[in-house]
Length: 286
Ligand code: AMP
Ligand code: ZN
Ligand code: FE
Ligand code: FE
Image (cartoon, rainbow, N blue to C red; front, top):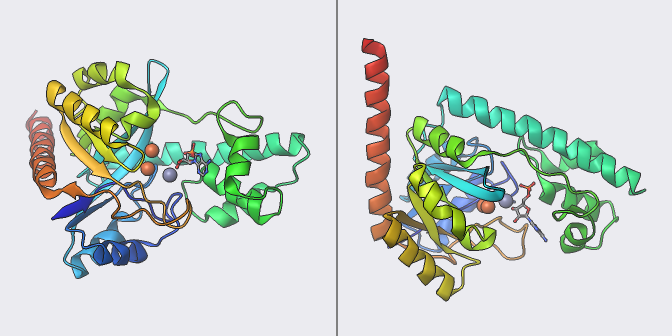
């Protein structure tokens, strides 16, 4: 039994609907899936329903962008209450920043005499959590770039002329927000962010796990992070980071997390939810 715990839908920058995603998960024989769209939990209800119909276990999730000592860190929140008021308030704030960032990137493109319109990006994105991949696709659709790679290389990568940095919460706040919502905080694709130096510090700040299995982790990297997780007492997770058809072929199912790790994750989620209930009861009795 295997799981894929890092997946995106069109509620952020993936191409699949929740139902399409689950249909692919079923084809790959997944026993468990999690949806981890950037800065949103909107797709979780539909993905949960589709998983239930397909007898696949579903773990609600999200992927937040955080910062620690100048490093960008992506935090996966697993088992969160998708109706938690504080989480939804913060997510709403991240989405508003993402939307104004689209306007800023389009303004920079227009200064470079690239006639892209913000409305075209928003129409194409058709979600509350737009990002650079939507700008790239809009550039391709308008015939202003040959493909998404060109859009990123010429304009959108860090320090390229139309790049605008993303608003990031501190990693500590991100971890606390996930815990507040009864979830478990996992650092996504540590091998991509070259963040090894800050992982022990983040573990001290409450990080629960490390995404050791990831599409872009070669076997040596995977082994390295499995060892690090063991040394630091962190949970192990894994997923494909599938964005549907938006980044070449759909990756779902290409990373197979052995189910034993899901059981450990579920136990940690249950403990986080129990702590949350305990905190709420203590507050009510005061
Ligand atoms: P954002 O959250 O707006 O900063 O955008 C980050 C997203 O852009 C991530 O999902 C990246 O994987 C994606 N991305 C980065 N470089 C490229 C690229 N060359 N082609 C397609 N997507 C990319
Ligand atoms: Zn993405
Ligand atoms: Fe990420
Ligand atoms: Fe992701």
